[in-house]
Image 1 (cartoon, rainbow, N blue to C red):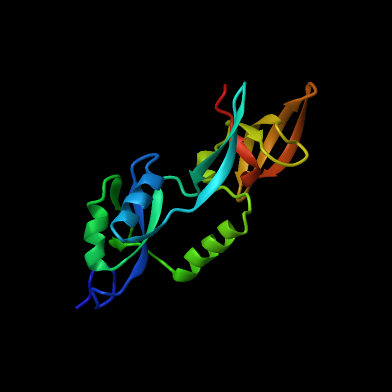
Image 2 (cartoon, rainbow, N blue to C red):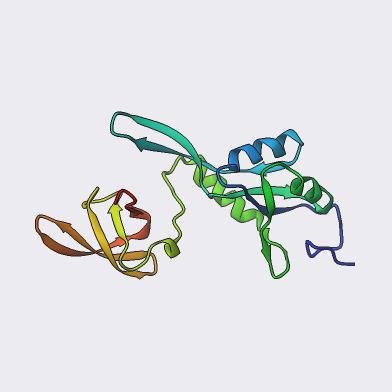
Length: 177
């Protein structure tokens, strides 16, 4: 008989993804570990700049998500954990993440590579964005078109428009408008 994880054994463990309350990823990770449930919340260090100071803060790599290594019986405990909203589902079953994907994420995080997950659906035509890296660092502009992993934008500095194609990973929405 097949279970919700797609296998016949209740004891078989898989990496699953849980959706958490906003800004609860690290708390959920800690609460799960306190229950002896293996969980993984990749953390990246980010420097936040304010007008008067800079501060390094640790933020989850995947906003709103924590990975858990559980079997079907442990899944119930995960659902009951404070801050967990639900599992992420794919085709009616909890989405199973391959071990190799988790290993790749861990390897990337152990290399201390500066990385960030950016959803290209968050950037649209007409948005104001700021470049975070590269030759046009800290320049602002307007999105003309999103092309795969690149943003075609007009940079507005020096009283002229410069059309540039910039990787999505190198831009951020300019929310200070």
